[in-house]
Each structure stands twice: as structure tokens, then as C-alpha cells.
Image 1 (tube, helix red, strand yellow):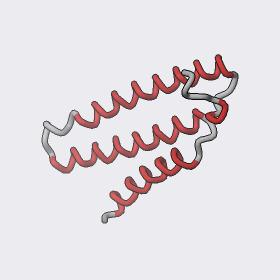
Image 2: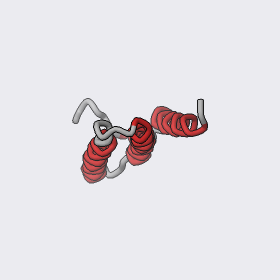
Image 3: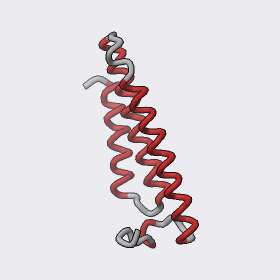
Length: 98
């Protein structure tokens, strides 16, 4: 495994572990999810550069667009949750009542 592949896989794994084990606030979960998406974007962009084909060059931009939509939806949920419950702690939320 090259050092570049190791760094991107470790960045993705670090974001995944942060999402799995550090779920106290909704904002920290969203940041871990964005870190995972950023590492996927950079890895996909480098993968497209290695093939040197125009067919794969749109995939990183498509992933970036979906990541931006996911971030905006997550922040909208964060604002709505903070307004209704007064906090963004995940332990105070009952997701079955939503």
C-alpha cells in the first residue's frame, strides 16, 4: 500500500471511528461524516487523474455536489433540532417521535 493510499484510508477510517464512537452532539457527527466525504472526494479525484480519461473526471464533482447537498440538509436538521429541543445532543433526541 502506498503512503497516499494509506493516508486516505486512515482519514476515512478516522472519520468512521469518530462517527461510531463520538456521537454526543449532532454537529460532531456531521463533521465526522463530512471528513469521510472529503477523504472520498480526494481519493476519487486522484483515481480519476491516474486513468487520464475524461469519462472519470466528472465523478469527483458529482460526489462533491452530493456532499454539499448532504451538508445543507444536515445543517437544516441541526437548526430545526436546536430550535425544537433546545440542544443538539443526540441523547436527548427520541428519533421514533420525529
